[in-house]
Length: 145
Image (cartoon, helix red, strand yellow):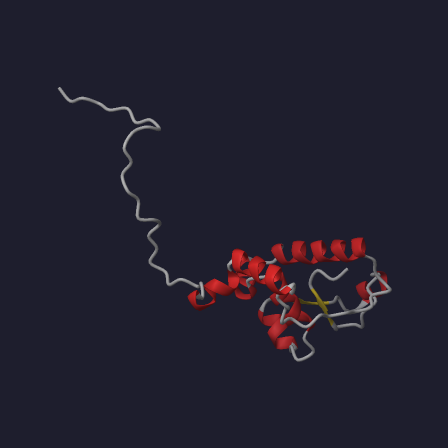
């Protein structure tokens, strides 16, 4: 008869060799010492200077919109992106890429139409009854309010 062993916290452990991955590491090993928090703190204690960021600071003045309004606009833009077809979302990958594409002045009507982002406005008598502010036959971007 086979004897079953119940493992507990005192049982002998099988050595583990870590997580196996087949993808190349994105970690830059040459910067290991620079990124170690213990080394950063010891340098600060020794010199009294923290590492300086290499990113340029950006400043901008946005008097027309407050923080909450900006957050709402961002959420609306993301929601609009996720309402697009899967093909368009796959092409642009992120809402930011999509917004850059649509807002780029070099983007042509043909490129917008390729993704189905343009709609033709109604012309004729029904245009006079509509509340659209665009000219007859001019394209509107889908989702514009």
